[in-house]
Image (cartoon, rainbow, N blue to C red; front, side, top):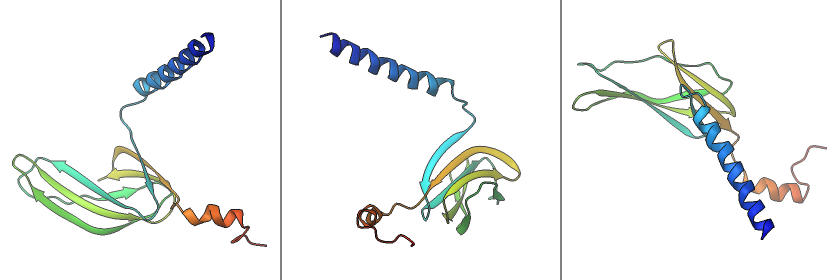
Length: 128
């Protein structure tokens, strides 16, 4: 019975540490995780009478290439301008819109390769 209570108490302690960390974390930044080769759609919401274009700059280590955009949508009380990018390689995205930091930091993970684990078992694909 003691082991069960100690395990439950340990899980409670571990869960409370994660809860405190999520509450104390800075709220200005938004974290996202994507894979290399994925598409990233950035939608900018604003109030205006006409559609606007924005300059999106990546100051991170990963490359992104514009596929389509700007595409403007007209809603009832606001407008949306969307840009679609493809992410080329692993690294980080640190986005600025019109020179202003937007607080979105994306960690770009390498593209998953399910066959890689099998190749490692058979020692294939390694340079000699």
